[in-house]
Every structure is written in C-alpha cells, then in structure tokens.
Length: 266
Image (cartoon, rainbow, N blue to C red; front, side, top):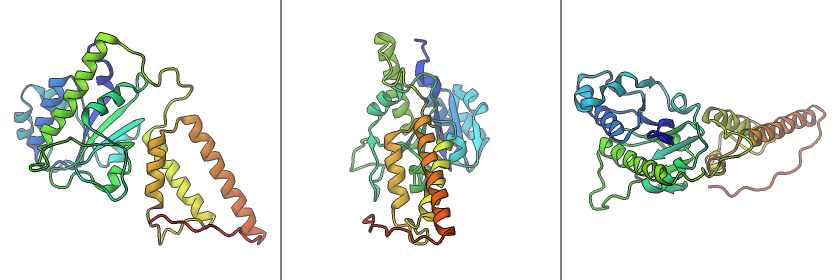
C-alpha cells in the first residue's frame, strides 16, 4: 500500500465557509495529514490572500481547490458521504466519532470516492445537507465549551484518517467490501432514486407532498444506512417503474385503488 493509500480518495468539502482564513487553515491541516482534495461550496470569499496566508505551505491545495454551487455537485460521484454535525437532530442518523469514521472510510473498496463534509462557521450543515449524507460525524468535545474552530475540526478528522492509514501500512488488512459483486451507488444516482421514489408514492396516493411529515427523511435515512449497490438500485428502480405503470393503467380503467394503511411517521 502506498503512503497516500485511501487518503487520496477522500475529499474535504467545506460548505458556505464565511471566513477565508478558515479555508486556508483547513488546507494546511489537510496537507499536514496527507489529504489533497479540497472542494468549496459557495464560499463567501475565495480566492483570498488571507486564505493563502493561513495555508502557509499548502497554497497548492487552494490553487487546485474545486469551487461549486451546491453540495449535490460536490459529492455527486461519491459512494460514501459523511457529514459533520455538532447538534442532535429530530430524526437521529447513524453517528460516528472521528476514529470510527476513519475505520469506516478505510474499509471502503479501493478507488471509492469519499467525501467528509463540514458546514459553515455559524450554523454548520443544514438538515437538508445532512440528509444527503450516509453517516454523521461528531467530535466529542467538552460539553462546557463546545465551540470548535472549523480548521481545528478539519485537523482532528484528518489526523484520525492519517493514523488509520499508518496503521494499515503496518498490517494491510483486506478492505471490508473487497470482492463485492457490484459497485456502490454514487450520490447523484441516489438523488435520482429518491426523486423516483417520491413521485411513485405520490402516483399511488401513498404520499401527500402538501403534508409530507417526515416520510422522505426517514426513507433517506433507511437507504443511507443500507448503502445500496448499483444492481440493487436497478432492481428498486424497476419495481418503481412497474408500480407507476400499473397505477396509470388502474386509473385509466377506473379500477378502484386498494385502501392504504395509516402511517404513523411524525
């Protein structure tokens, strides 16, 4: 295994960063630990001399950083997306601390595109952004003083990734998913699936978009936790397509739909 190992597959995504110095500090933290892929989603100020100044010897990461307009664009080709969150959410998601996060990332199949996503300095990631992540990551800071600088948070996560990489250089165990018969789905493929799933549920009168409650959020959590591969996704999309076709035929022939059961999602 090379020195970079799985680290070369990991991108750090900063969403809505308001202070350019934090971008530079994050780049420096990344280069210290051997990561090189930096993606910026709608930064308030970039390029910036202050970012370069804070990056010190990591200005090359800033020069090669990719700037995009949405989180979807930043992670569309990723098979694993981990979002950082310091707050509890109404609907809980699988949560890791940085060391466990490093283990999960290291177990991904070789060549997988992986994103670790950090939110803005004031509010962090939105619920909508976090719903696009397979897992959430939280740093177990002192609850009496939980304010953690963005650059420091990136440093902690990158450090754990590097320590895991150094461990693997010594032991080189097989990745957990090596030999799997189909590639994991990319983030953009999952977003298309969620759109298809929601429209199908509307077509069969199971889902009311005017009163959505938490249905799609809970379904996103389910499939994010499951981690679909491309063959499984193809099967599910086929089921949805057939369901839509049969629903259309039933409506065209005025056949009454079967009564639906009551849902209890709140």
